[in-house]
Image (cartoon, rainbow, N blue to C red):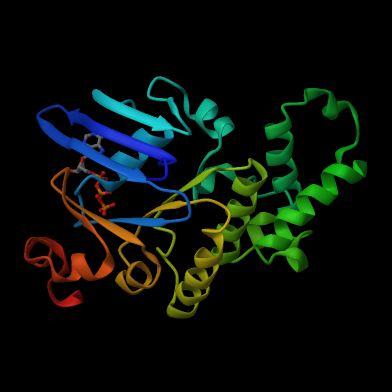
Length: 249
Ligand SMILES: Nc1ncnc2c1ncn2[C@@H]1O[C@H](COP(=O)(O)OP(=O)(O)OP(=O)(O)O)[C@@H](O)[C@H]1O
């Protein structure tokens, strides 16, 4: 079997008396979209926070690209290529889309000396950042301040920034939230191409998107994974239908 890019084993997180993550084991394999679904409050965001390092697990392990990252900071994990996107805070709204991606490229290069040079005249840096914007379809919007981009465009920008960090896996927490039907459809098409860059762990309530995209689905209920399988397996699973899917299936 191909080695998973991300491997989570027996992860546990308690908030006081509440066990928000209750022995979660799951993996993300090269080339796949693995969707994580479940009712509100099931613990999906808590799990994503532990994977990206903004929340520390109480016990269990997180392995990424062959190493244990459970004790590393979020910044260290990002530098290793764990790309959490759709974190609005990562965008500087007053900067252009291009400048935002350039900052991500610089962060990857870790080259502080560049601050001595007027960055917009650094051809290599501009070209690299433009390539990322082209890959997400934002070339025409490169010079627009990020604050003026649409909701969907900002998500594309975040992906361009994650690409600049040479992410080896993407963690996407509800990317379709707040999008209309057209926006969701175009983001679905986009994510379908993004999987060629790196596998995606996708937390999403939009079942049309999940069923269209996922190679595998894991269902989280009260902090526990109650089932993992293909779209068809999950749709047929009686426990999943009872706990979550109901009429969606
Ligand atoms: N920092 C915290 N302190 C205490 N309880 C928390 C904290 N963060 C989350 N919780 C609780 O942990 C449980 C899981 O929450 P979480 O936000 O991870 O669920 P979710 O599956 O992402 O929900 P949704 O689909 O609504 O986003 C909930 O009961 C929530 O109230």
